[in-house]
Length: 165
Length: 296
Image 1: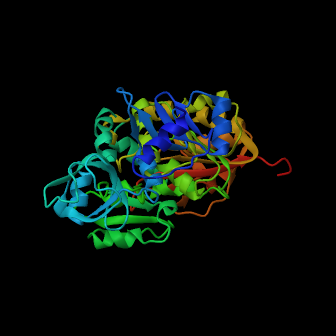
Image 2 (image 1 turned 30 degrees about the horizontal axis):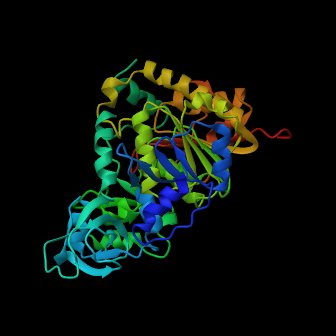
Image 3 (image 1 turned 30 degrees about the vertical axis):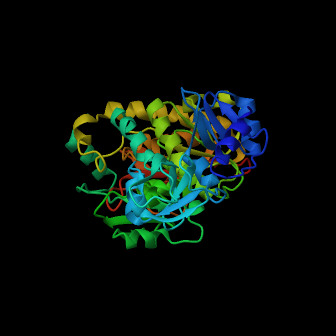
């Protein structure tokens, strides 16, 4: 698969069609980036960079693509599978917790167990994504969406770095 | 040549009477990410008391908050950055940033890189350099959080910028410096004049490299958070005399820089630099430079 196909394939799990410019999605080590025309020509000329343009995600050790938060933001207005949660559930979600049925305000797209879905707060801001843990159609309460990645990760990933400075 | 008395006496000779200060925390709104809504209003609704910084377009002091302003949804979504008020000044001194090729020579942890991207509206290209691996991680996290799209990051010593083979329209030099007592309570105990001189030497090397890679119509903004003239006025005086650079008038918060330092007469044009003594902000020094015009 090309870099573009990997990223667009991930977005499709959420019902989002991304049409990224071929050749502008580049792989650097295990990481994927979306570049502008200017950045593309510059990075090709200079080589050996660490980060460029929009970071899209990386291939983990197990070979699975792990998205960046910027990719989720790119997908946010295109994804069909989305749930909107109340303030308490939103806060718990960005603290790394799962979503319970009681905190869900709205479900759009698939409700089937195993489906990937973006999670939004009541302002329509994407907070991360998860996987539907139980069929939401019949679910009365309890665990609804397993948290897979959320914006609180920015705080969690900085902690060890701050200590080492 | 160290100790509080030694340094405080130097500040007195430069015209400032020492007093203890506690600079306030400040935030800067990332305009590129808040198009169409009022993030300051949202923070106020959360109970964060903010005061507009009078000399900054997008800066606010945090007067009171019951929680860390670095842990709100708004922060995590890149709507604002935490950036000390004086540190927000240098990037605003450039003219016409949109579409330009900009060098951020000592970029980590990324506060100014994000601010530059914001002022550029994510257009053009920022080449961000730093040497410290951990600080580079912090820089890349900031870029992702604040949705910066126009930056490429290299692990490279600013003194080796010419290896990239690029010429830049704008160069931000927020150079490594000795810092000051306002943000480091032990500053007087662990800093010596020898440290200051060592940093000044490194800063001159960075300035010299920047002058090499600057386009003929380009601009450099040099900044430190040091109060020591060796890292500030004396370096600019040296750059004016040795690098073919000239200072440019700026309109910003701060005092005109002195042109006589400890009995040494400096080039008159050094007064165009701005010296910010600690008070409402931390201590800071900023100067805008360009290549000397042939007919000047």
